[in-house]
Image (cartoon, rainbow, N blue to C red; front, side):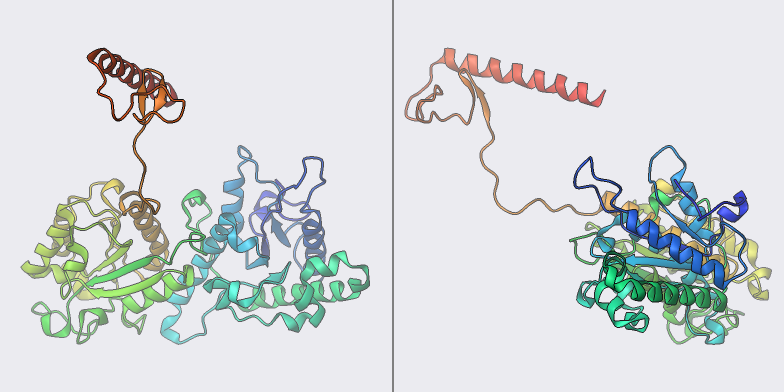
Length: 469
């Protein structure tokens, strides 16, 4: 495993300026030399330009995963690099968007940008991504997944030859050497410019990388639905003495972090989810107005998030809704409890609000019963932003364990039986030794058949047990 280019201390190895995300090309023959050799050369050239354009210390220009061998701490190294890098550089190729590994890297970095966009939404600042895509092999726009398509990056600004051939074509064809040098330099300038313009806060360097969902969705499967439901007050249903500042005409207008944020929390959540994985179709619903969407006993149609306003539990019928939701196992619905520590009314009734919330969510004693926000809740917009990816991962994981499964199309054939003469379907074919359909087998044949079947079942049980052991 090679970390950032060059040498440097451990601290610098955790803070590369950019992270190069690429899809490994497998060997077509065991004797073939490293098929990713040209990517490594491109990475070294890019790091050299970034070093010249900045005052970075040695070894901190870029990070490239060059060995993905278990047992070498590669998950920890990847998590650290993705948590601290300034810019994410995905190296586009047809193989890239089919790679679950690349999708996880994209999701992990995008989580940081999404959280920051949510925190900055109150000042109407332009959303940031911190992603600078590069072409290894050109990919038709129609084949790009939505997260990549939404970037709308004009690759022709690095040169027409680059847009037509990608870095692989430029680096392999000698007559395009000058165009290669120009494109790498232009990409380095773009990386440095983006890194200087944005200031992404660090992510979680200790996240469980294996549980990070891929940003591009499961290959070959339809887009999955994700339900975002809200159980909150509206201005017409507020408890006595509750200020209407955080509420609107509908429950979906609820914004507990007012005035730090100016938009409804549900809208913020949808924006974050789409920036993390826009292949997911997000549906908003009001739990109180449409309780059947969450309380239906049918198999789940997708994972979900429930945003719970603790003030809403002041009403008995809303407490009953939460009791019904938690009474039966529905772990594919993650419950999040946002509130603002800057709200004086909430602070004055903290004990009562916490008690109602803990009572409502009491059946969720651990993660196996479904994700829930700890008793302290999410007291700041920043805390809420950082909690969204974990809540989504938990909901998706439980949905995959409890969701419906679909058998392959077509009708199955008859089950085979063990006959005195061997394995068959109880019908003698040409030259077969099984009983004829037109004949009535005698009792001895039936006894032998039953004994053989019992013996086969026992052998099968032993084999299955051995496999488990």
